[in-house]
Length: 216
Image (cartoon, rainbow, N blue to C red; front, side):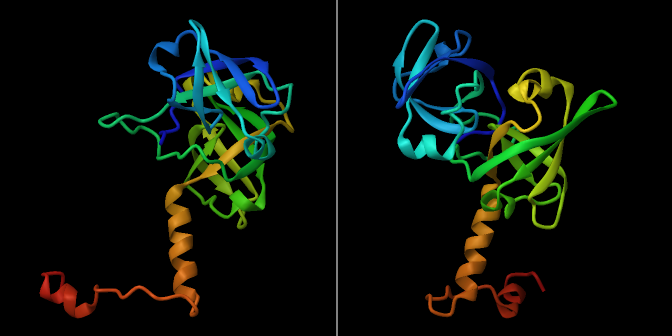
């Protein structure tokens, strides 16, 4: 589990068909073999360490659902896994992306940036106005979206823009998108509730229950 607060930018030093070697000397002291690391929002496991970085295995499934196979990709956002007692300044991010998107436009507004994105339908369903979205592992708030969520915008403060890979994006570049976990659970509950062929949960919350417990 992660929070979407990027700790540093790493550099892909080597890319094979089944592994990535990432240069991150200022973060390596916080990583042990077997640890989970969010790499551009994708949860990978550190399988080898050096004094300046780590290596992570990448499965065909991961390669097929991410842009790690794109050799133009050089810089990646990095975040180590959330530990018990850590502050949660962003939102809960699983590291399992829902789909891909791409940068459609950007503009400097005042001292901040507004970035527009197009999202694939599989993730667009979870994008709502003022909701949370992880873009390449960065926790951001949706400042606008169309009804379907396939087009949305985020406002980015200077600190976030300068300390993440957002500043390296060009129009048309692909990004990893992960919707808010809350939206996925709500969707599941509604799907179960509307499917008469599935066993329905028996709610214990009734008007009588609320009255009995002082909510009337």
